[in-house]
Length: 81
Image (cartoon, rainbow, N blue to C red; front, side, top):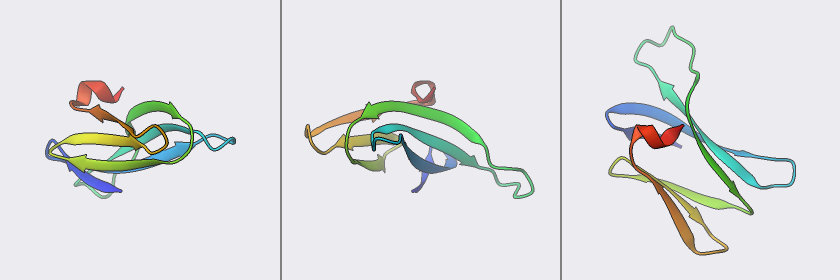
């Protein structure tokens, strides 16, 4: 997923372990200088079982855990580490 968060463009990638657990969301900042290599800028640690849904609304990263019907909301860049 590509999203704009606090005026920066990010590629959000869900990472899974070998048992299928959703371990984390890696955020790669997409820089305006395309000659620079894209690297992980933030990590959201989840450790959730099964699949999750991912949305970005009003600079909030929202992770929906489908089985428990609960969501985690990450607000500011300081929560991304």
